[in-house]
Length: 498
Image: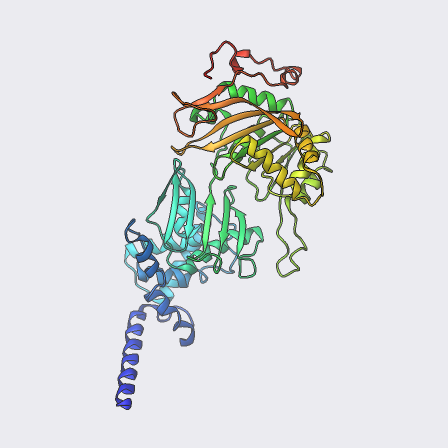
């Protein structure tokens, strides 16, 4: 009986090998590979590991547009064959006709040498797939090029979400497999000389257009490599664009311009995806052309139009080193910027001990500096700054830190993403000083909707920033710089609800 079972198992295994050889007949002569090299590849493509994930997570959601199995396998095998070196196309991008024709010529040559017959539709599908993989971002390249998509979120090979007009929806786009996702991730980080591997499974990066990228790979990413891309428009948004979108009013724009030109220190506060960086970019555009600006960011995103701008970016440690050599964090760059004779220091985001260095700079002659923090309200942003200063490692009493904040910060601008997906300024608040051991804040503008009851800003769309009726204490500083703002901007002559 045992021998009979052994014969049946042997016959079945032989049959499976013959079927596999028949299915792969079109690849004979493609490259000089040994049987040991080709054998593991076949089961990966014939029985994709991603299929169970599709059933579990996507079966009840949206249908997926998948590459045909034959093209998917060709695509996988050709990725490395069309390049002279693995990083040859790292600086290439879609739309470069010369480079595209070079790759298309190589593709045709390999197909002819391998004697692989493809229908016109199959060839067109393969050509587009190869160009997207080698010169773009693979399956998500059309989404990256789309002007209507503001954010792309890849969760493994089978789950890709996109944000359009503030709304997040799952797309029908998928990668072929996890290897395909990792190939795309490596193409993003290689030009930046950053490592994505088991020793460094999480990376912050950026695309050539400045779009922000965050990547996490397994085992930390349970469902497969996760890529989050926050896109930035090819043309930076201007203050006129934000007024047109309803982010704030013309009166508030005139007031903010006066504050920036008059060298007030401004903190932009808000949650994730609320538009802090976009607003910081617009505020920075008010800085006069004759001033030297130093920008400091984790990954360069600001798109300032002034001529005299020094852009600094954090650097990861040297791969394979001790984890310290070669590393520059924001705090290092803030300290270095103070020796560059800056007129303005713009920090993309304070999230650690650099907050203390930033406050010190604001208090020691670097007026007109700008930064952002993560918080839900102007009052929360003060508590957030206190916490960040404590992270600097200095054993300072809390009242001392609060006095540093009160002496440094003049204005807090709170931004938020509302229920309808729109992003707006919801509070403009003056920091007036200290009363005892507490920081005193006064709202100058608050976002309101028609019929709103209660205090605070509205979380619904359809409203606008309204003045609170209070004039800022720094109005004299604005007038010294030539800005004589109408009292109506601050609500003079208006009736206010109690």
